[in-house]
Length: 191
Image (cartoon, rainbow, N blue to C red; front, side, top):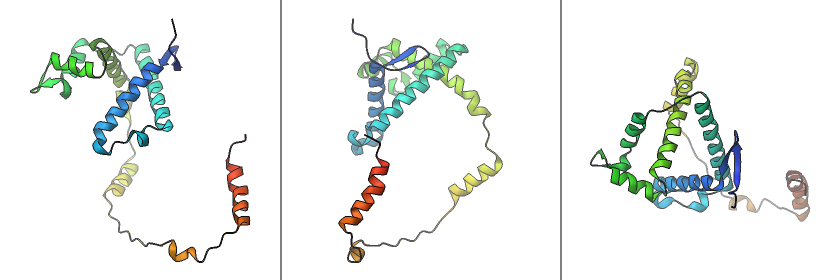
């Protein structure tokens, strides 16, 4: 039996390649829905985005462990009500079991795995909720933010065409070499 590659381990629990790939597909689909015709996976699917996604999975796993350790749970009724409120699984404003199964099948998920994930997400939300409710910003900070958001500014632009200055610039091979010696070689990691 071949073991699936692990990308990270959190409290002894691995984050598998398959789990990451599923989260990656979901992320790309969310971008596709949000951006429509402007969606270009080559622009969005970068190594930095993949690293960020892995960090999100690690953070989710850490929060899920906190929820388990502190016995944060979600009742079956809360889970049912949350699922029933999802617009994609409703038909004429009411929960449709058939539509629910179709939506999950289209995403390659079973009701059991979806419900376990949703239950975990709701428990994690209970971990974060007290933090969000207890945080307060000082009045001075709030006033400063409100001022910045409602402030009107006048901006003037002035365009400088490179062609107007090209004749005034002369670069010699020695200038290029000096720039490379100070910039290129000092910024590159050692071989």
